[in-house]
Image (cartoon, one colour):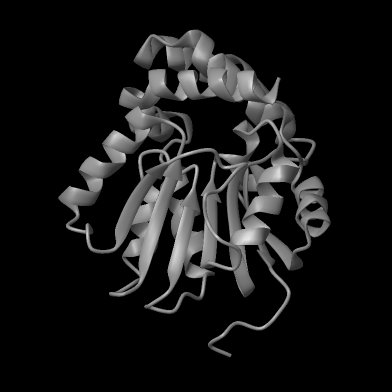
Length: 241
């Protein structure tokens, strides 16, 4: 069942890849770049670190991490959609970051990396689309080095009484309409708004992080709770400490 679900979601992202960046700007009113910038400011990353950007899509966060590094530091952008990765590769060449970025295709719930490999794992707007989120978090925990950090940036749900109904109306009504008007993909964006509405709350995601073994779990919310960045640390001491 999980494999069928993953295959269907992969097909969806293959389909929306050509319009993905433009639609992100439209749906978030451009604020997704601000969320990512604010999140990056909270990450302490050594210049020679080895990072993994899961569900990297068209590579914007992969590139943002790579800009903080210098050789032999590197970041692997990992995604299951070949069309998304093709666009990401074009961006990497345009930014002249081939020496710091490697792109790989695969399943985020079965990572092809050894234990204790990475100094940082990021995942942006991807966890909610995975059929087994706990398994994905367990895999992330496995490949992180002791003392290293997971940073997850995701859409979330506002809980303020005045904001919540407006947010629900926007995602249930306007987001699918935007998909029809700007990308001719109503069904695809109807599905994406459903994953946003039904994804774990920011409090539930804290519990999921802790259940996977992460410590020092905390979060930052954006736009009255429309998005949240969660941070968790794998217990232990890094080799550099």
